[in-house]
Image (cartoon, rainbow, N blue to C red; front, side):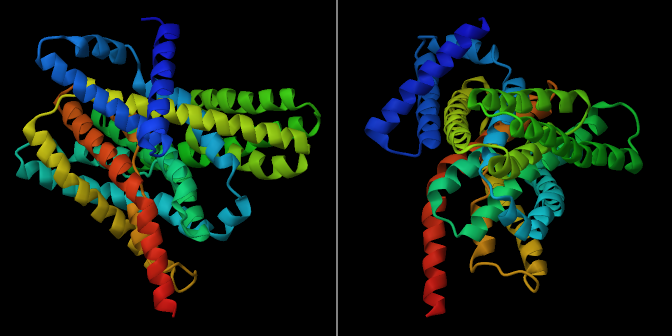
Length: 417
C-alpha cells in the first residue's frame, strides 16, 4: 500500500475516533483514541475467530507501516520539539540537578533493576531469554515517554515544581535510554567484543555530542529568526530545524532526540523573547500546538491497532502482568534514591516520590524500539511484554495520575494544618 493511502486511512481513523471520544466517551483525546483503536483491534480479532478474516486485511495495513521509522525517524522529532518549546528554561535550570540525575543515573539504575528482575520473572515462567536481552528490555522500557507524560500533565494539575521535574526528565531520559538501547543491541548483534572504553565513547558522542549539536543548530535558527519579520518564513525555519536537524544528527551518529530537545528549549525561550514579534509568537504557538495534538492522536491510534500484529501466549501475558509491578518498583527505587540524596539541598513536595513513580508513563518510544529488534524468539517476548506494559501505563496510570496528584496534594495540605 502506498504512503498516501496509509496516511489517508490513519488520519481518517484518528478523526473518527476523536469524534466518537468527544461525543460519547469524554476521555483525554490521546487516551480515548487509543482505547477505541485497541477495542477495534480486539473486535477484529474476535471476528477473525469467527471466520470473517477482517483482521488479516488490517494486519496487512499495519505491517506495511514501519512503526520504528515512523516514530523514531518521523513523529518523534516534531513531538519533542513541540514539548520543549513550551517549557520555561529558568524553571528547568532551577531543578537541573534532580532532572539531570534522574535522566542519567536514574535511567541507568532502572535499566539494571528492570533487566535483573525481568530475568528472574521470565525464569519463573520458564520463558527462555538471556540476561543481556533482559537488560535490552530494561533500556527500552525504563525511560518515561515525553509524548505520554507531557500530554497527561497538561490536565493533571500537578504542583508546578513536580510538573517541571517530570516533564524535564521525560524530555531527556528518552535520549539516554535510546543510546543505552543501541549500545546493548550492538553488544548482542555485533559479533565482536565491546570494551568499556568503546561504550563510554559512544555514550559521550551520542549524548554530549547530541546536546552540543542541538545548541548549535538552535542558535543558527535563532539568528535567522531574529533577522526576519515574517511569521510564515519563521515557521518554515522551525520546521527546517526539526526535520533537517534531526536527520543530520542521525547522519552524524548523534542523539537526534537530545539535539531537538535542546534546540526546542533555546527557540522556546530566547528565540520567543528576543527573536519574534507578538504575531509570530501567536502563530508559532497555535501551529506547534496543533502539530502536537494531531500527531499525538495519530500515534496513539497506531499503538491501539498494533495489537493485531503481536504474538501473545498465556506465558507472555502472565509474565507481563507481573513485570508491571516490577517496573513500578524499579521506578520507585530509582526516583527514591535520587530524591532522598538531594532532599537536604533541594525542597521537594510531599509525596514527590510517589507522584513521580506513578506519573512516569511509558508510550510509543518503547513500542518503536521493541519493533526495531531483529527477528527472533526474544523479539516476540519483548514485544508482547512491552505492549502490555505500555497499554497499562497509558490507560491505567494515565487515567488515574490526575486523581493521584489531587490525593497527594490534599494529603500535603492536611499535614500542613
